[in-house]
Amino acid sequence: MKQVTFSPRHHQLTNINTWTPDSQWLVFDVRPSGSSFTSETVERVQIHSGTTEVIWRAQQGAHVGVITVNPQLPERYVFIHSPENPDENWQYDFHHRRGVTVCGGQVANLDALSITAPYFPGALRGGSHVHVWSPDGQYLSFTYNDHVLHERDPALDLRNVGVAVPFGPVNPPLRHSREYAGSHWCTLVSRTTPEPQPGSDEINRAYEEGWVGNQGYLKPNGERQRYALAFIGDTRSVQGETIPELFIVDLPDNEAAWKTQGDAPLAGTPETMPAPPAGVYQKRLTYTHHCAWPGLVNQPRHWVRASPDGEHIAFLMRDNNGVVQVWLVSPNGGECRQLTRLAHDVQSAINWHPAGKWLGFISEQKIVMCSYPEGKILELTAPQEEISGDAVVFSPDGQFIAWMQPDEQGFRQIYICQTGC
Image 1 (cartoon, one colour):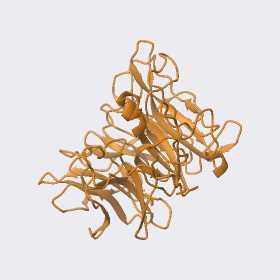
Image 2 (cartoon, one colour):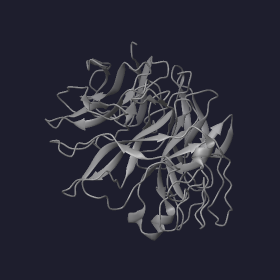
Image 3 (cartoon, helix red, strand yellow):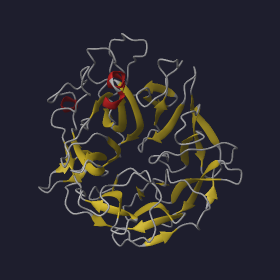
Image 4 (cartoon, helix red, strand yellow):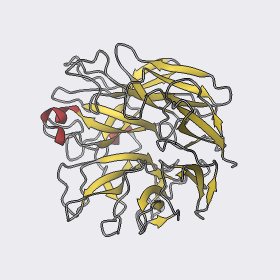
C-alpha cells in the first residue's frame, strides 16, 4: 500500500475514469467532503513521484470538481463547473452546474444551456453531473437536474440520465444572462414521471449509470448493440414503497438518430422534461419487489458497472440474510446471479478490472478483489481504521487500484496498491 498524495488538504477521487490512459496519473479535486462543492482546482498526481499539477483553476467565484479522464488519447479531462459570479438568484445547485472539458490547455463548455422558451434542441435546461466518457472516448454520460421545472415546482425536477455526443457545437440564442453555448449535442435518455404507477416499470428517478461493455453488448439474435447505458431507476411497489431497480437504454450510433425527435420534444416544454430521441426506450432488467430485501441498495452509494465484454452488469443488492453483495445480470435481462457470498456488507462503490476477471471494492475495511466467475475474495490490504467507499478504481493497465483514506492528521489522501494481475 502506497500513499501518493501528501499535502495538508483533502483529495477526492471520482468513482471511475480517474486514471490517465498511460496509468501514470490520477485526477482529483480538493473538496473537504464529497457533498461540499467548494474545490477551486482540479488536479492530477503522478503515482510514482507524487508530483501534482493543476489541470484547471476556477475563477470569478466558481468551483470545480468530480473530474474524469477520457480513456483514449489524447488526454482530455471533464469536470463539473459551478456558475461564475454566483448571486442569490443563481448559485451552485443540482440544476445550476455544467460540464467543462480541457484538452491541451483548451477549455470548453460541454453542454449548452437554454432556459428561455422555446428551448433549443441539443442544449440542456439545467445542470449536468458526473460526466463519464464511453470506453471508446466518443460519448459522455451524465446525470441531470432541470432548472425550468425546478422553478415551477422543485418536486417536478426529477433526476435523469443524459448523454453528450460529439455532434455540436450547440449555439442557442442567448436570451438570458446565464445561458451559454456548448461543444456537444446533449439529450436525456431516461424517462421519469413524478408519480410512478405502483407495481409498474415507471420511475421517478434515474441515476448512477454505467456504460455497457467496451464495445457494447450482444443481443440474443447475435446483433451487437454498440452503445448502451445501464442505470438505477426508482420504481414504486404496490404498497407505495420506493424500490430501486436496474434499467438499460440502447443508444443510437449516428448523428441523425440523436437529433430525431421521438414522441415528445427533445428540448422539453415549460411543463415537461426534455425527452429522449426517437427509438430510445428504457427497459427494466431486475424485478425484486417480491424479495426479502427488494431493490438495489443506495448505501453504500454505487454505480452499476458492466464487464468489459458487455456480458454482465454488476450491482449491489442484499441477499436473503440482509448482507450487501455483488450481483450480476445480463444486459438482455433474465435471472440475477449472486457473485459474492460475504459474511459482511460490501462497503463501497465497485469497478471491474480491465481484464474482466475481477471486481474491486471494500469489504471489512479492506481493499479486496472478487474473482469472476468463481466469486473468490483476494485481500489486497489489511483492515484500515478508516477508509472511503466513494471510489475504488483500477488503473487502465490493471496493475494498480486506487482509493482514499485519511492520514494521521485526518486529511483524505489517495492511496494505491498493486493488484498482482
